[in-house]
Image (cartoon, rainbow, N blue to C red; front, side, top):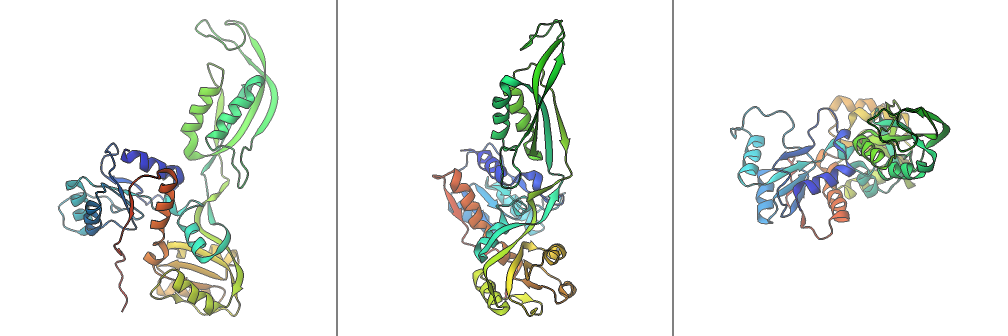
Length: 364
């Protein structure tokens, strides 16, 4: 199996298109065509992580955080990032990262946190716009079902919890082929009228190339007429954070104790209690202060996240509990998530979860 087989599969779950503009989720070091001997799953890439990968005969590290986050202009080993990249290159170890693209999918990092906390029926806290498109195409009536099903197979036509969604309108198409054509219906050089169906179908933007390929493969015409339009609609399953409800309300202090134990946090920094039980829970792995207003607008009782600054805690304004459990602590189960994703597809492949705690923060 090649490294690209593994990374491409991850990207069917967390497409790179879904990463934030500042991010660098990708194959950062290594050749995608290398045969993969095994993969080490980790939150961070460190020199010690590369040593661990070599000990386990793994030439691929799959991390959540990209080791190269900003551009590197030199590779002289002057800081830990340069040293790690140099060591990986010298030892033929590839480093791949799935970061905010994995944060932003409905089945990603935040869903894993919700599962750990028993948050039921979670939805995206801040859904993203401009990630959906619509295809319009025109198909002879006798081929509509075949073409439509081919489009559905790409993942097009999904709206929320419904799939195979489309809109179809009957009409008449006209065309005339020149001497170089071999028309499916009609004769070259003659104006032809054909009973056609206009198919409208929504799809995630990252599927566009695949969708067009399927359309051209299954459509009977030599020249396939279609339009693709970008939509302003939000994508309900892609975005930042998640929100849902506990099966039963918990007293605030009981919830915070449960949170600390479940997420293996050394401490929980939190705002004042708000005098009501906790039932609606918002979460964001990593630094999530930018989502506080979303959590408050949706009437969350608590917002579980990390990396809060002193003055930002005041923004809770006694309306919600902010619970900062630490960056590493909030995302540590991403390693578990990686393993679940990959074992679903590659059942007999050598996968190892790191035994190294890569948290740079210590508590006294």
